[in-house]
Length: 228
Image (tube, rainbow, N blue to C red; front, side):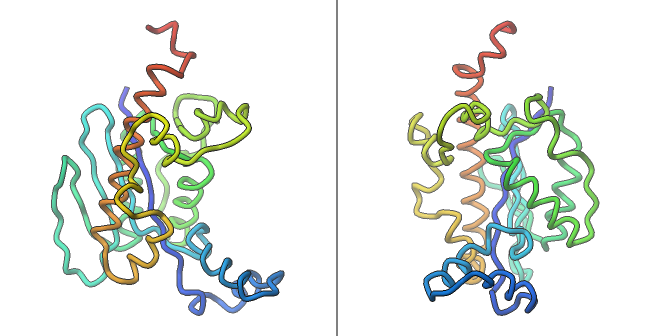
């Protein structure tokens, strides 16, 4: 059975560049400057107000992967690092590469993909006119999509959902955030032209998710006990 891990990075558009109707909607119930700032700081979370700037894909078993990332200006050439091939392109390019790759695998693995990565990819693909090649939101309890946030939360049985960073620290896995970059910095990194830094941060998420997947499979996924 072939499987692939994927993760995305997103960057919110400048608030002033958004359609006036969207701006009005976002500020409809906002009354203070702090609330305005909070709205502007949250733009990267929504496909209506942000774009995909990187999609990383890693086969957890062969440890080979690809990183498709935006790099406006055309100054960065494709390169390879730690078994991951890096390919710069436009948002449309990286979404097209994602769909062409994802259809080749039986199973895909994410962390919070069901509520963030997958819906985000679907909406941005529609905006860019890129056709999907498979269902990204299949049966929640099946094996086609393993969302590790969902699985480690035991499908809602646990009272709190923890971040990838917290799970990494729990199991002694190196957290991608230990190098000083978090998802909140991606927008500023993108605006300042640090495209490779974003791509490498995304790659760190892939490797962390791989290690977390192996721990979940070995110690927590009791549904697989009959196969051992």
